[in-house]
Structure formats: structure tokens, C-alpha cells
Image (cartoon, rainbow, N blue to C red; front, side, top):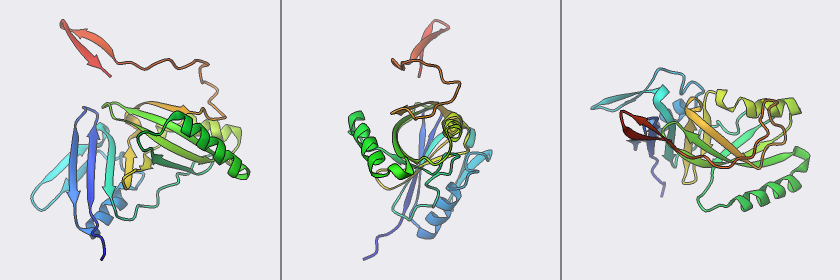
Length: 216
């Protein structure tokens, strides 16, 4: 018995809200996924969702991330191409520790030393407070300059796709990223990297008209 194909889209915005959309038709699911997989996803002024009864337009500059949960075949957007080589990105299941990532990284380098494959644990944070942990698997083939350029320009790529744990694909709007933390650190960092140890990242409070407002 064939499994029916459907798609649930969750759009998380910079104001901390989220909207969900659903499509049960396989042909329309395929059309939606093909559009989402284009580099122009966040470059258009608005993203429009339409059905037979209503239409919703969302300003793309306000979108932090789009999560496309589906059992349909995923678009061929991964691995990403970079100056340093192909990069594959996946969501990390909850409960995976930092120590497990170090073991994975060492094992990967031992088994794939010829291709100089590396695994990084990357935490991403957006304007609207969305955060997640991603596994970045990179097959480093470029020069040291290429590797530095790849990390230095992470905020300048048009879209960052990643595979979801439960099936499907996510799309991060780099313009709405506030912080990206990688562990272990890449071998080649930008020349402008400041030599500082990370301690903590806390929300802060500012007073406006006598009222405390938390900003995170």
C-alpha cells in the first residue's frame, strides 16, 4: 500500500510568531518543494500562500526560517556548493551531546582522511528567537583561503537549507541570523576573527518609559 504524500509548512517569523500551512495533494506538494528549493526564496519581496478560499502574503524579510515537514522526495539542494567543497547540513536530534560530536568528527576524519571530511556541531540563532543545532558535514577540498571564505561569508548566502530529523527540509533566512556557533572550530578561520573564549550569551534588559523590556 502506497503512503500518501503531504506537506506541512511552518513559517517562523522575526516577531516570534509562527504560521502553519498544509497541502495533501502530491502534485502540489512537489510544486511547493521545487519553489522552496530555489536560491531566490528569500530574495522576493513576499511569499504568497494560496488555496481555493483565501490567500496569505508574508514579507520575506520578516521570515526567520521555513520548516517543510513532508514524506515526499526532497529537492536536490544538498550538499551545498562552497569554495571549500560540498557541505551537507542536517538537524541534530535532541539529546546528542558535545562529546558525541567530537567522537563523530574524529571518526569521520580517520575514515575519510583522503577527502579531509569534517563534522561540525553548529548552533544557529535568529532574530525571532528560533534556535536549533545542526550537523554540518564538509568535504574540504579547497585551499586555506577557500575555507576561510566559506565560514566568513555564512551570513551572505541567499538561503541555508538543512534536512529535518522527522523528514523534510528547512530553509534558514541568513539575513535574520543573529549568531552562529561552531564546535569544534574550523581549521581555517577568517583573518578578522578575534582571539576570544566564549563565555555565555544572555538576553539583556532595557528600560523604555519605565518598563523593563527583555530583548533576546
